[in-house]
Every structure is written in C-alpha cells, then in structure tokens.
Image 1: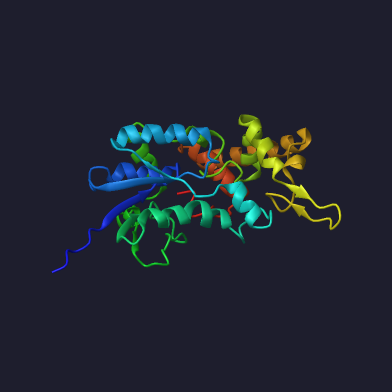
Image 2: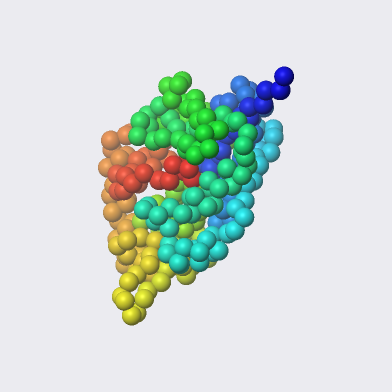
Length: 271
C-alpha cells in the first residue's frame, strides 16, 4: 500500500495587516504552518522590519521566496512595457511563479487573509489544482475591526508604512494612490527617483509609459502638484474624521485614501 502524501499547510505573508493578523490568529491553531513571503527585491525597508518583528512573535522563520529573474529582467522580456492593472506580469512572475515552485506537486492548504467584510475578493487558485485556499477570517466572521484588534492585542500593531501607505508591495506598485506616491517622494526620495527612471516617453510616437495613466511621476513631483494632492487628501481626511470620530487615526487615514481612489489592490501582494 502506498503511503498517503502529507498535506502541507502554508500561509503567504505580504507584509500587510490582514495576512499578518491571520498568522497571529493561527499561530497556536496550526502548529505545522509554513510561513512564506514572496520577496520581489523591490519591497520597502519598513516591510522587512515588520517581517522581522512578526518572525519573533511567531517563533519560526518566514521563508523568503525569490524569483529566478528580477523585475528588470522581466521588464525587458515584456518589451519594456510597465506592468499595469490590465497586464500584471509582475504578480505572475515575481509572486505566483515562486509560490508554485515552493509548493511543487505537493498537496497544500493555503490560508488566506481575506476578511469577512470583503465579499468581492477571492484567493489565488492554482492552475495545478493542488493548492486548496481556505479563509479563516471569513469562516469566523472577522472583519477589518477584528483584524486591527488582533494586531493590537499581539503587541505588533501596524507596519510603520501605514503612516503614509495602506498597501504592501513593491515601492513602485502602480496600484498606489496619488497621496501614497507623495509619501514615497517624501519618505524615500531615492526609491521615488528609481521608480521615475522606469518611465519613458517616446518622442517619435508620442507614447508615454508611466506608472499612472494620467500623469508621470515627474509631473506629480512638481511642488504645486504635491500641494494640490495634499490639500485634497487632507480635506477628505477631515471629512472622514468627522464621520468616524471613534475610529483610530490609522483607519481614518485608510478610509480617506479609499474615498479618493477605491481601486482594489493586487489580491496577491496586498493582503
């Protein structure tokens, strides 16, 4: 009789609040959990700092999964077309491919941090069919407020980048809102310049290859444009404060960004 293959239990951590809270929530419930982080090499330093704190809390390492080829290699392979919401080759090559290699042909249960209040979000479904996704927060009715309580009670709190950004992922992620790009400009000017260096303008065809469809990072960085973005953001922030007087400032900040731009982030990178 052939021995039944062992099922692996895996939990991908993005560096964001939901996946981190799920790791905390399941720490004492699933002892053989394998925690992993798909490291694109373009993450914020704050993300790595938070992962180190989380590892201490969990008492085991978070395995780093690195792509075989880096972003620049894949950019060239894709004709120097920047990734976008329509063509998310960055997610496929830098996140999903390393995950598939990590699991291989093993049967695995993937624990996903989609909350009970996120009806429209879905977890990754492997084309091989050997990875089963389950959603403990949905099953147990844990919403955004519940996630915040888990992180608060654990002593971890939120990653420090939540002071100016509400989505984990690469520093140049095209899902960023205008105010988050301003945050990158002010907090990590070197990374902002690197992100800007990827943008191109074809003088012959007049085509622009930029992270945002409506303006380039060079245009966004004009002092008067930065002031305009900040003004609109703080106006929205004051509205959210008035509507949510009992909410923590971090949540009010996130709500104000959502009101400015409700585009869903990458569902792999930003849990």
